[in-house]
Length: 339
Image (cartoon, rainbow, N blue to C red; front, side, top):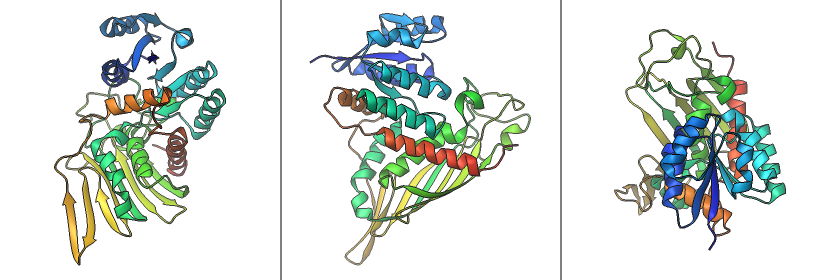
């Protein structure tokens, strides 16, 4: 069987710590053929570490060397690169969020469909053992009524890279981290179409001087993205979602939570628990052991490669990632002007 030749676009932290190690472990299915980065020194160092034979500065220069690309750049460049790669006849695996706007996502899907190639987005929380277990038992929950989503960090604003640069990233806590939990919750309930989105967007805390931040010092004067967002979302099937995400909440501890209350039962994802009624009793079921990989990186990479090779169906479909971006757009639009 021929291996999928993969090119990495962007040699930063997400490529080095998630995608490159995962692809390298799947050497029976793929080979990392090329890497590019505007910082050639960094690209060469990463290439040396991972024994990648081809190194370029411009992403277009690797297109002729590979069958698929993994996009690990700032969000601003996702759409441009993905469209160009699709037009070059390549499969595309893009870091989240899919793009800066839903309009850009639609252009990416159009280019991919025209090329007849795979396009997927790295919403890796779907591949966690807890999420996979929750998806399997959604039938016992029945029709979802209320979904509660919290992606809250106490004081962990990313102080490195371009995370607080609105032009390059498009936003902060919502588009960077909360998007994972929004995507997972939508997937669990079957991605019903949203009919109403109302949001509130804040960055008051991070604009204050002398911040206490576990992830390093940042300049409050140049902080220009959201650090806390809340939203209320209604769907065509009557389901409602209460959503909150933050990099810098004044809370006791970090809080990663998705719970779903349905007509027949309910569940919590982190940790995985199932709540049902049987034989006149209320049953709360916890599972101390769940099958699957300990980390989601490997099954995520495997699913993309096997989809490209025609051996599997994509877990993260581009139309679903588009919905995430569409809702994010509406939250930002309704959320008001940041201070």
